[in-house]
Image (cartoon, rainbow, N blue to C red; front, side, top):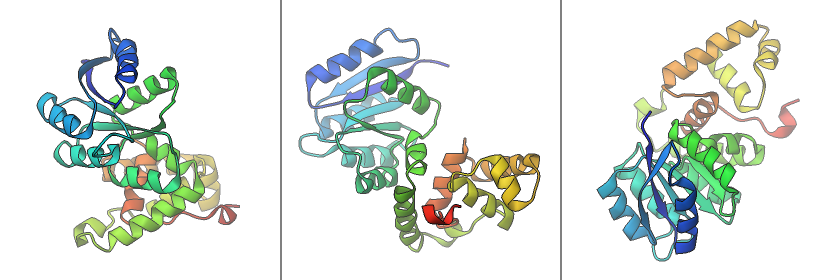
Length: 230
């Protein structure tokens, strides 16, 4: 796999310098450009077509979330990593809806940021895992996407999943392991694995968390509240 091109978008030159220092010479990444504000970032991405864009939320002028939306509209395959001082529920939902791949603290240690960069390079969405690890946020995300699903076209609302696959995916969303799902549905562990493989294939996603968020966006599954998971 060739090196992934990365654009750094941050208002402070020293921060960009630090990221450049760590990424320069790394076998998996190369810096294709830097920007200090949102407008510069959008123009730079159009010109360089990177694989990943690391964006600070609190940019002067157009904020990082709006920049992420603009980039994803014109370059849907680019992975966006959003750096934010706040990790609150509403902001996380907005980031997810904008198509952000990862949503990390602004003061994230370099080792953690590198791990996120490698995940996004593989096409993963660490933000999905973050959402599913917080039941109260997952429930809010579900409600947001249920309202959005009413506005989508009919062919997007139609679910290609069988009723049993929906059951399995709802239990995945509730944080159940394959073994727990097998016991709950009175099926074998291998059957659970077969269902999950079928779900990933039908939805053309790479992992369970992507499948859950994909289905949540369209209102196909519900996420149980913590009190309902016993």
